[in-house]
Image (cartoon, rainbow, N blue to C red):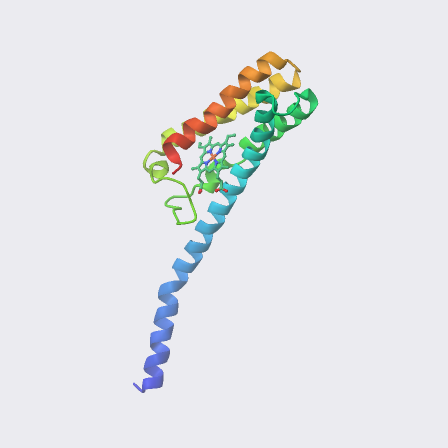
Length: 151
Ligand code: HEC
């Protein structure tokens, strides 16, 4: 083989070997961006409701209802799509435990989904006391998952 041919063959081999990894790395990055984007939506709404509950901003039932509805809608999106197997990276704070204990992770997400759906219902009914109580449940569901599954 001429040295040029040898080089071409080596390049082709290298390209073939690295192609699948490229695709995979891309899919992992996309999933990480998706789940972090979802979390940012959760956080946007939760923070604003939290300020009202803490009295940092005046309690505005109509605004609260909107945040609660958006949080419930976001938590009903396909959450697990953001956590394909082994989607770990330096850009992510996801712990390996997610994939080692997927049933528990999924259960934590279900509990969160239920808590936010209930929050949207009580906030829509305009019951301030019940809304404040249920807010704690929803915020607690974020923490319960982060404690075990987020670095
Ligand atoms: C079922 C588990 C689970 C629930 C429920 C959950 N989170 Fe997370 N959260 C995670 C994991 C895992 C990460 C790390 C994601 C990553 O970096 O790849 C994360 C990351 C985040 C981040 C950082 C996002 C970023 O851009 O790096 C914020 C903010 C956040 N969560 C807010 C919330 C809020 C607010 C709630 C509740 C309203 C919530 N999360 C509910 C698991 C959860």
